[in-house]
Image (cartoon, rainbow, N blue to C red; front, side, top):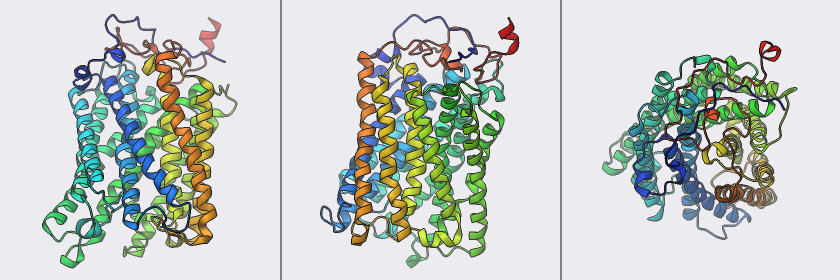
Length: 545
């Protein structure tokens, strides 16, 4: 296995308390250290992931039989709303940017912290305030609108505390805006000497592209949710056609944010995958600049495709044709990334450690999700597949199969840096295999169910669909085991894991030149970058020397 050339000399250890083992609650709740804030997000989103997982477990139990055995229709509606709201707004969107991005971005740039440390802490408080309000709505009767809050049902007719739920998402959205703004300014202003744009790690490029979407798109969602609350509270005719409103206006506003939000979730995962594949193939990323440009292209084109969610609405057929074309176009930069990752692996010195297994899982599942997205981007095919389980399967292959695999891959990759401890490899590899196998058994049958015509969001279905639903529920049980295993062995490693040292993977990047866990100030001496990223092979001159 070849050893990378570090981009900066190893930093001498700092004196003082270890931030990770300082147990004062006050010190954590008032911290402005980007690493601690990343850990606060990690604990928070793990809790919400478990809550969302409980909801979907009950849904899959209900779907074992064609009859509504366990829950009434209204209860089932509240369960899938709870699952969707928690998983999308309080897990998937903040997962990689707020956890790994907060922890790693300043170190990757050679900075001591983000540009606005106090605003960074405020973003976590806003996130938690929004989540608390959403949980209050769930506990006090729930909401049955689905995570998309479609009007006029949500703004006029729905049961439950809809205003509290949408205001929870509204408040959390401000945390996202602050995070995006912080990351943009940090990337522009706090790079180490010599760290020019095309020496940045691809994870930084992906965070930068994601931050652009967060800052530009999230205010549109915020305005939309306020309008829903106003119509529901005061009967103003904004979306309800019975009082002069336009329900399609909501769909345009909502999807103008929510399709770019897909890339808020997936772009950081793509950056994580680039880091892992380069490290464990011991190669420079093939076509580094093209991959970097592809991140920006995805961020830009993502704003132009929202209308493909509305092919079966009263949207103009000509608008539908344009959105269909643009939807095919936005797949090109994603396909470029998949090609470049594959080319990076080709003839590499492959080291099959746990992070690489997750990255390979991301590569496979994201590819399936992307290819099935082309079916939904085709006008005629989408008419048949809209609101069926095909859409559920496609969405989960991208968001869960792709995003969660990348998140777990990144967590395993940087866990030794975050904690200074190594986790046991064999249960970690087993969890990656369980998740990959369980995921495919869960969601691949849903492509078939959707093609055959089973509508989503129904808990009573035709008996001929039962076999595929049983397979899907069986896969979900395997998937649950795969998700719970990391919780066990990562927590175990905090107490019993072997010391990791500063760079157990022999990876490149400034974050690997500090101690593990990193000191509060990150660097005792400001690093100077003189090499391109991913320099896993010494130059001929260095070899001759």
